[in-house]
Amino acid sequence: MDISVVVPLFNEAESLPELESWIDRVMKANGFSYEIIFVNDGSTDSSWEVIKNLAHKNPAVSGICFRRNYGKSPALNTGFARAKGDVVITMDADLQDSPDEIPELYRMIAHEGYDLVSGWKQKRYDPLSKTIPTKLFNATARKVSGIHNLHDFNCGLKAYRLKVVKHIEVYGDMHRYIPYLAKNAGFKRIGEKIVHHQARKYGKTKFGLDRFVNGYLDLATLWFTNKFGVKPMHLFGLLGSLMFILGFIATAIVGILKLYQMHHGLPYTLVTDNPYFYLALVTMILGTQLFLCGFIGELVVRNSPRRNDYEIEEEFNTSNSTNTPQ
Ligand code: UDP
Ligand code: MG
Image (cartoon, rainbow, N blue to C red):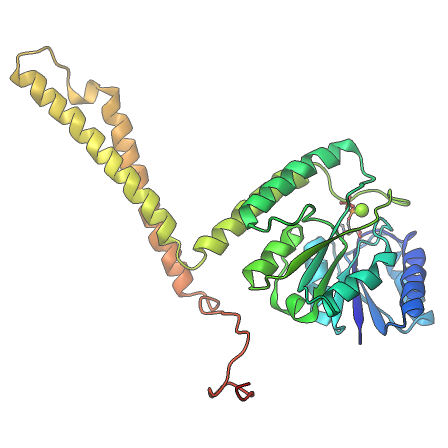
């Protein structure tokens, strides 16, 4: 099969028939064999009935229905697990992404050697309250992830080589950072294509402004887990040691200063009357706590079944390999 289209959806009943027939039209015109996997993320409208009806008339349509609403990332992850096409394309259900982009996205993956191609809604049809923070968000994501050529991390329209979606795990709200997840899994050829964007035709957006707060927190998490996921002591140990040493030196200075003043007959106060003493003490305590955090982190990692989970591209002449050297 050439293409799997994965469509996560939550209350998008009106858009679905139009989306299905549009995708079908594009696929037939280009002679692609395909499947559409609709992942109904606990919709409370008639979306699921609509999907079942579509599957009746088009055998390429398949559906998964969550019992409740989990979010876009869980929906994508579940669709990815079922996908079989050489190229997997994700697309929002609200008709904001155009299926006309599919042939070119397919070509970039199948013939130009990209692992992942992300859409870029260069001209967006969304309210300003969304587009301006998005610019800031993308600039930060570029900097933190080191993927400098992407302008639109969170674009719903993306294409992947099949093995990419089988090797990444999208959970929580991490769909915003799929290119970063792919990069962390070792897929380096990440490209971008300017895509056509349309205003929402039916229904309303499912994400409010909290997306930006959560987006930044998730980015911090990804950065941390990527850098220190299996060696938390390297971060907490360093910070803890620095703080402890700083606190220790400050305490020593407070003490030495008092001894000096006593010795030279200068007026002096009790160490415990000096506010710096308490600041220094708190710094030492916090440093110790951070250091202990590092130890606890290491204990957690030691028991994690994924601590030795590596992405192996190829291997030969080992007991695990099926290939001979080339
Ligand atoms: N979506 C989903 N589960 C949710 C929220 C959204 O599957 O909990 C789907 C939604 O139906 C749509 C896509 O994710 O197909 C993008 O959502 P939306 O169009 O609301 O986002 P926006 O375009 O405003 O960024
Ligand atoms: Mg949308």
